[in-house]
Length: 141
Image (cartoon, rainbow, N blue to C red):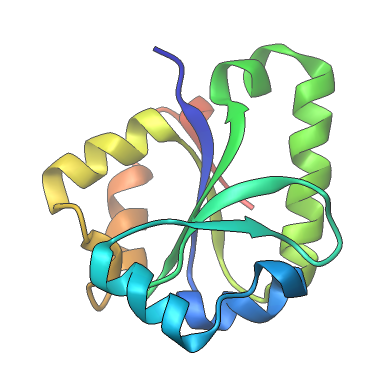
């Protein structure tokens, strides 16, 4: 099983919404619905054509690209594509951002629960945990 390139962003989802392309920004009713159901939102950054899934209901934000982490590591073209997208993301958000293999993210979620990103201090707890993991599986941007 191949896992996705994922990101944990030290900003509440509401604070990331302005960085989404206008047609990808949820209105208040849609935001309440994804919070109630625990659903993901389809996202795209203002300055990009790359689609992704995003968790908007938490104290922090989680993003999943459709790119496989194994391809990111092994394919120079895919690697450059991801790095270029990360540069756009970092330019739009003034926040700490961690790129992480979805495999690690799933391990974390199995330990902390499905809605760990809604907890106060979620980013600090995640960082404390992930820094103990193999460095090829995550990076602080």
